[in-house]
Length: 88
Image 1 (spheres, rainbow, N blue to C red):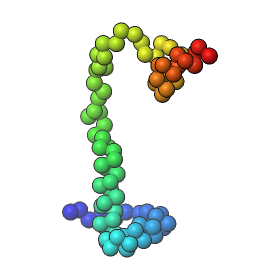
Image 2 (image 1 turned 90 degrees about the vertical axis):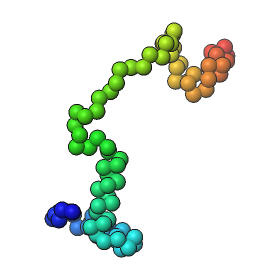
Image 3 (image 1 turned 180 degrees about the vertical axis):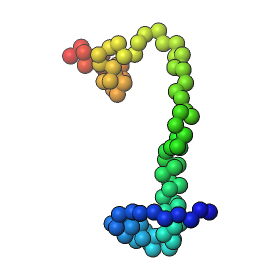
């Protein structure tokens, strides 16, 4: 392990110490767990340029599903509900 020194705002320190006490963890363990959680939620952090978007999938659609102005309504209600609304 690496030993390091950090500076954090007083209020954050107080809240982290409270969390550590409630969980029966040391301050160091609490900060390690917080760092691990942050890295797990942002797996690309520190790896700029390592990920790229692949080519678009060939869905073989014959019509553009977004050509109709009411595509959002159709997606939420279903095409039969949209047709019934247009008739009324």
